[in-house]
Length: 371
Length: 253
Image 1 (cartoon, rainbow over the protein chains, first blue to last red):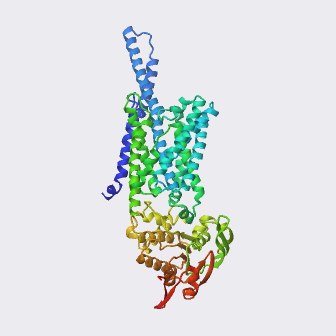
Image 2: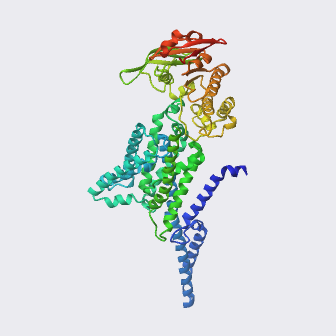
Image 3: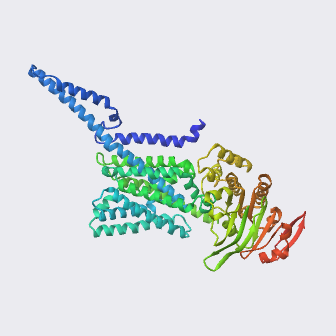
């Protein structure tokens, strides 16, 4: 019982996660293309044998009625086989990759937000409130302008470089500013991001690429072609898990880190590279998922504390569950069509962000009232 | 052994904070650094712990220049606790103490590391709050938690920069008693920056008085705590009385 009392939040999240995975795989226009279609291998092999057997039946000496019956049987077997085949194809080439994309991009952005918050020691930092996402969009546009013919990987590389530079500029400026209230930082970050996306819009306008830019900025888990890029997220995720204690120590301040023999500048740089890599690859593969990098780390650390070693897996699970929920909502509201996931994430995430912002302002007031 | 040789340090080009500092840290002693604000005590401590590089001169740990030792290895020799860590961070006491093992195990705790952590918690009497977050406990308990972390770090040298900041008298006395005990029980060498000369007089074995980035005078409390030396160091009139063999400065005039 003690175990359940202590772990109920984890258990509840895992259960919700499993239920959502199930729904995510089952919902769609093609019925029967769900999880069941993965276990039809035996039936498909049997059908193949049956088709071969029916083909091999000699037709000489059959009367018309018998021939018709055979053709009918052949057609039914073929149809059944085709049905199973297409159900399985939809599962393997659409729904499963989509699920992986949701889980990886959500977990990635959550970790990116967590690292940014540890590096800047500010709970309101995230890829979408520090210009990182907007810079990735600008980079991707520049990729199209300069290397339009090259594959998505080149655009991804440009997005990465732009995201890294923009984030480094923002974090170094922020660390020099002496702000009385932490809530100003996301607001400045959003302004900064607005500036970057204004540049992107201007360039898009001059190069007649505005429609492409608009398409970038509408996130969707239905961009089948770019999904492979999302698997790049696995590399920074792996590195973050490996160095998670170092990032926790960084979050306690420069002197603290140096005392423990951690090379502060190097770890901060590694963190920013991870953030940029995650932001750029999810942006290219999926598009912007605003607020995920902000609200998920806040939820995870308020439940499980700031020792990232203990909260990083919960954090990824939270992120994946949240985005999966948003994805399912955007697939259901216009069923059988789907809405851009950015819209759902923005609405739901925006509301939670507002709550955090108001709470942050109130706690700021309380601290000043005390002093 | 830690030797400080000809250390100078400055902010910008003209403002010298440390001017040609030379001394040897006494082993198995509590050494107190005292002096007026801006005398360079904290800077000196940071330079010795290699948190900031010296502009010239060198610090030798066991005969090796600290700047040439890997940071991770310095962290096994010298632990440094800075004044007023502003902690609004939710980490359990036990995890904070575990961070102290980082220089040794790189985050992957083995049995020996867990033993050290558990010993440190036991020694600082923190077992009963080991699972509380450090933003939920009192200032004195938090300071003890950080000392426990430094104990887990298991370094022969411990530098404390104004450990009594934000502590009331009871906790300050408790803290200095702990510092004293670390030297007598565990054979540590401790250098501590203190603002209140009376704490230095009561608990230090050796006092270094700093003035304008230089060592004005060093010696035992009996040698240092007298008005001829302290008046110029602090630029203040001291009235010194002796009670039960300890010297106490009265500075309310």
